[in-house]
Image (cartoon, rainbow, N blue to C red; front, side, top):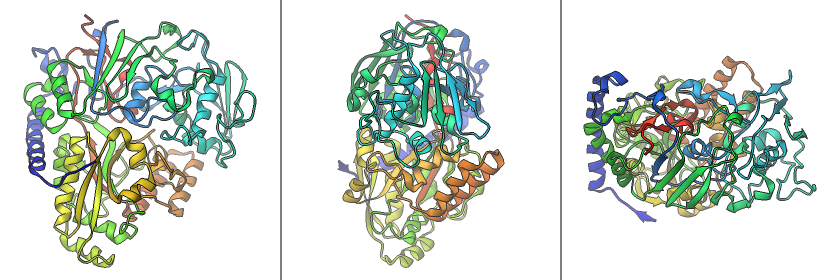
Amino acid sequence: MTTQRTSGRRKQAMAAAAVVAALLTTAACGGGDDSGDKGSKSGAAGFDAANNKVAQASLAKKGGTLKFGGAQDADSWDTTRGYYGFMWNFSRYYSRQLVTNKTAPGKEGATVAPDLATDVAKVSDDGKTYTYTLRDGVTWEDGKPITSKDVKYGIERVWAQDVLSGGPTYLKEVLDPKGEYQGPYKDKSADKLGLKAIDTPDDKTIVFHLPKANSDFEEMLALTSASPVRQDKDTKSKYQLHPFSSGPYKFESYNPGKDLTLVRNTEWKQASDPVRKAYPDKITVKFFTNANDLDQRLINGDLDLDINQTGMSPQGRTIALKQHKENLDNPVSGYIRYAVFPQSVKPFDNIHCRKAVIYGADHVSLQTARGGPVAGGDIGTNMLPPSVPGAEGQSYDPYELAGANKSGSEAKAKEELKACGQPNGFKTTIAVRNNKPVEVATAQSLQASLKKIGIDVEIDQFDGSQTTGIIGSPSNVKKKGYGIIIMGWGPDFPSVQGYGLPLWNSDYILESGNNNYALIKDKSIDGLFSDYVDTLDAAGKAKIATEINHKVMEGGYYLPFVFEKFINWRSSNLANVYTSDGYSGMYDFVNLGLKNTK
């Protein structure tokens, strides 16, 4: 790891962000529908043309190579282990689920639609039994039928956290809250299908028996972690190198951190799949170590879009807004970008030391480092994203981060330092991913403002593809002295359970692949989550979500930076493009097509 202190690069990043804000104002004033840019030489649809609506739907052709680029590889391509949003989005090319997100723009894309199943679940009156029937003609890449037992086995792999750590564990917690099942690799039954909560009476039928009703259960089944896996193709920890396909594409080659190529799965049948159109013949991904290099390749036309979907870097944004605004969309993401304080690293076991950082930070500077109010987003004032029912946006601002303290309050910060027994400040380390220039710029902004209140910060940059074992390991975080971790999070599905459970519930503290970085063990928060899953009416669920958010903010565990917005690139050759709330404002990858397939 390299440690970077404040340098001229931070000033350059901040200056670039200011330019971006100005350019975006100009871009916004120029309109952004298809009609406004029909005369563009590039043939692109227009600024914001694919933001919550479909751009150039009728122009998609069969064939060609869809070319992705990325500054970061997936955490894992194993459907059980992947947790990055772009992995969930991309994995639908080679994996199917009983149900999945609807292929539609905006909010409609966050709703559930049947996939392998003939319809959404038949649910019992008590909300504890979910029954599905598989479609005819669904097959693996070798032509063998996908069975209900394959679906059950794929779900059982979630229990094998000692071998397959990293992915979401909602299904494990809901179907086996007492932790009685040991996973398929320790399963003593002959068929390794010993999870009692799932029945497979025949190859076409699968029945889930919940010990306790959970109103978000079908959303959990729409996650990639509920994909089928065939036992004879399960290579355990090596499965991520070559998952066996149930979708329209299959792995041809994969070189971790370098490139990935998918080709058509010739055994896939369009008649069996109402979700996927499978326009391209081939899909390629090239990974770059430098985000600026990636952006330049996008601008040059060598690539169609960024697989990571976290926005262009400051340098790339500036060029694109000046010269190619018709190729850009500016969606609100479902993400909040934030700093989080692990309580295992002193002095952040003290709430007042945590609050000292919250008050000492310059929130305008942090917003600017992330791209300003349009490219970066509104100043974050709490930890519940706008897309989640129960969110209050900036109207809930307990630390006045967007108000009186938006530039930081040295006086309040020093009061908190005194209260936590560190009147002269202290030293700590910020952990930040090295392949995210905007995150590094954010860390440098925070470093500079904290120096003013006597908190001396070093910045430790780590390989973003190794997140699971670096910041996802509480023992490593403590060993490295990471008192501040810079990260972001979007909803796994649009509810406080789908967003906050892995972050704030004590049951979700894991030895590896941990996302409860603050190590929150608050009985009142755990109790509210328990109340939430028992609540079936929408208003009641939203009220509990609000209460959970308030408890989290009162604990001072987080410093929210922004309710994030993106500037994302779409090539002039892309067709059938739209952003989806189902994937936190990303383009929905699965039905992208090309206008020119040569």
